[in-house]
Length: 389
Image (cartoon, rainbow, N blue to C red; front, side, top):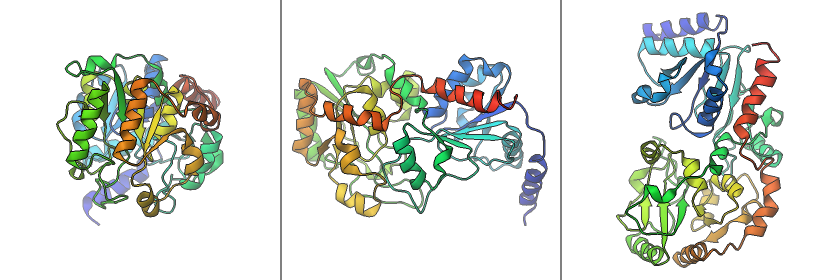
């Protein structure tokens, strides 16, 4: 065993025995985003940083200069740093924390005296059973309905009783009012359709491939240009945000007037969250992504790009009854289907409004903008207050 590995192993044993301190750790991908960031903001609003040390476990070290760390008792540690000093600091902080809060990357839980809440990053549609699951160290995982929690329990091999359907905190952002046109002043449009495709080719070294196309419909230049011209004629701006896991080398971003590609830097630059942006768009385009469930809360049209449905279902498969659950979205197989969806959105036509309203009570226990409040209340009432922390 290398000396550095021996030091780390020894440090873990010793540090795990230390008493717990008033530390709460937070994790998300990207840093400061998703469900975790909204819960963090709610805790700041309630003044938790007056009593607790709030620590972000960072994916990227260059985020250490974020304005968040100018707040009282707000700090950070590196998730991936290989230096012995940083690794011991990470182990010490995580092992000393009373609360561990994550939404994407699991962190180790060193003691049963700690409370670990996984906010998750979406109710599943794709099947991951057999190769991905939640660790048993998690005390509770947040969901949005009993129906979907039961599905996730099987899909993630996680005890159903540990799920708490409080609603995703990030969905609170859907209710915020934002002027979308202010972000695209040079563009001419009346309606905005936000396209959030799931990944087809994973950017990880394993290169997981679920489909032979990088993105439906516009993977060839001719189709992209036709769609752009049609969207322009209808006064519609199509904003595309590739999935964070997508292998971008397989994706062609065309320079077109009414089709725009964005990434997470767009939200940092404009000081807006992804879901606040999403909630103010006029319609959603997606496919096999959990954003479908979330956008149902807005009562706006949803288009589902189904071009590679057969291939995707054979390669990965799904954990829900797709015909039933996804009945609230218009199925789009061809360029012509996409044009029709754009035309309907431009004209204010919403063919599946009634179907979405029928599905909504099954997919969402709550339909308000108070999920972050419920999550923090749950933590306080079931862990902090009950245990006198």
